[in-house]
Structure formats: structure tokens, C-alpha cells
Image (cartoon, one colour):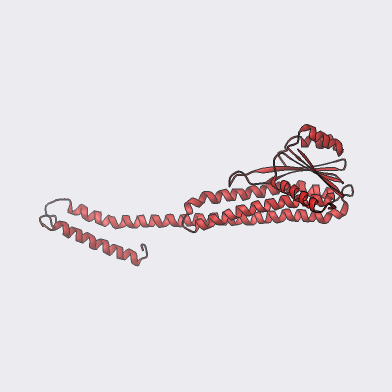
Length: 306
């Protein structure tokens, strides 16, 4: 499907899941070389920059929300830019581009003489795409905040997997932006060439790169926080396990003297104390209670229990 947004200063062509015929017609209209045209016929697995006959191609992948929290997903966007046009080619619905189309249509209805040059359209496209990545990052960070609340409310075991999932998402976001850096930098530098927009595009180029770097910095900050929380969670789990082991050890140590007393009075050997006493059971029980009380008091003074 092909959408066209024309303005006095430039035109934006958006092709969503284009057919071979649509790509062919687009290439003929804007004099796209066969080399670049072939790249548009199918998705490209990695980022790519190509330049040919005053037309620049950039293939980048943007992280996006999956169907469920924790699901990693990349969406490819191909940018084809000439001096008087910019085209985006995508192979699925990409929310920020869809919303931008609706926004531009609304603005055009409200202001019929709206003028947007091609270099402005390029900056707007990248601004909306990186705003979507920032929103995705904030969504993951909000989940991390909920995990932190659970962690400090005594649910350390439940949050182990949740923290790992969030950390993996931040790692995926960071990797996606890192893969863009080289091709995007060369692409924007090429657009600053006199054959495209010239030196006037330099400031827009700096803003686009700064936008990407800002999002990357936010992702790295949140990833560092998730790493610290994972270590804190592990420390809390270890402390809880140590408390459990200490409690079990103290209980075992309390029961050993009682078991020894029980064994001694149960031997039934000649001369066993209290063997013929009708109150032997209660006497032995009292001795055990006294021993237990003394041991418990000793452990409490040492702060091993309570």
C-alpha cells in the first residue's frame, strides 16, 4: 500500500508491505537505481547504508512492543532520500509512522498552505520514531518500578524472573540502537552533502543524532538500575536463606540435648535413674523443659534467635 503526502517543499512516500509492482513504479518515478530497488523488495536482516545516483538508502531496525510484556520485537524501516523526496518502506504496521500520517493529514486539513521541505520531513520522521522508542523504554521502566516494590515487600523469589526479563528487554533496546549508530551516522553525513540538502542540514543532523544518543543514555541508565536491583534481589534472597538456615540450625541444636536425655532414660539398664519412680515421666519432662529454657535463653542472649 502506497501513501503520498505532498507539500510545496517536498514529498513523503510511505510504502507499507509493498508489492513488487509498487516498488517498481516508485523506482521509476524517482529514478531509483536497480541496486537500491532490489534492497526494497524484501526485509533486510541488519542495518545498511547505501548511496547511489543522488539517492541515499538507510535500513534500520527499531525496537517495539511485542504482543506480551517481555517479548522482543524489531521493526524494519527503510529510508530512501533524494533532494526533493523522502520515502519510508516498511513490511508491517509501525505505530509511530501511522500516527504521524494521521497528524500530518489533520494539520493539512487545518492549514492548506502547510509547507514542509524534505529535510524537515526527514527530521520529523526520526523524531517520531525515537519518541516511540523512548515511550517503550519508559513502559519497561514502569514495570521495573513495580518489580522493585514487590522485591522490597518480601516477594524476592517471584521477582527473580521478572528482573531478568526486564534486563533482557533493556539489553535488546540498547543493542538495537547500537546497531543503528554506524549506518545512521554515514546516512546523515551524506544528506549534508551539497547533492542533497547541503550544510543547512548539519544542525538537523546533530539533533537527530542527539535524539538517538539521549534515548540510548536513558536505556543504559535504566539497565544499570535493573542490574543493581538484580544484585540487591540476590542479596535479599541470600540473607533470607541464611536466616532460614540459622533457624534450622538453632532448632536442631536445641533438640539434640533433649534427644540425648530421652535416649539416656530409655535404655532400661540396671541402675537407670527414676526407672521405678511412678512420676518418672513428668520428672524427665520437667528436666527437658529446664534444659530447653536454659538453651533458649543462652541463644537469645547471643542474638541467635528472636
